[in-house]
Length: 125
Image (cartoon, rainbow, N blue to C red):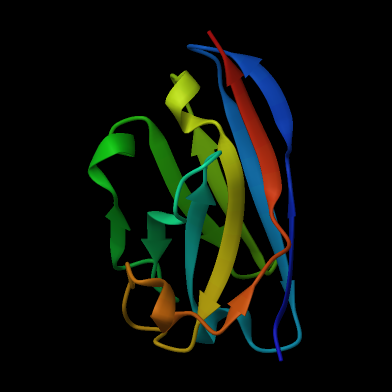
């Protein structure tokens, strides 16, 4: 079992920045690929970014490229999402997830076995 706890919830103005964190426990963190997903109001959950266990593979959805940065600190068992130049359409509940496909950076939610409870990000215009 892997337990995931997100933090960093916030309300920011458009153009602002926010950093989300996801603390993991239970298994060897570096064995897992990690991802961020989000679900906006009235929308399906969507992929945001993913990173392999060894940091080599990183993947972003097009709408956040150049604005968001995913990173991880395997010594601290923590995943991060630095979000810059935020837009109102980034408003969503953000979830971190862990996948046993450690060498990949999976984009599909089916690849992930463990999920956090979510943290709210609200961007005002």
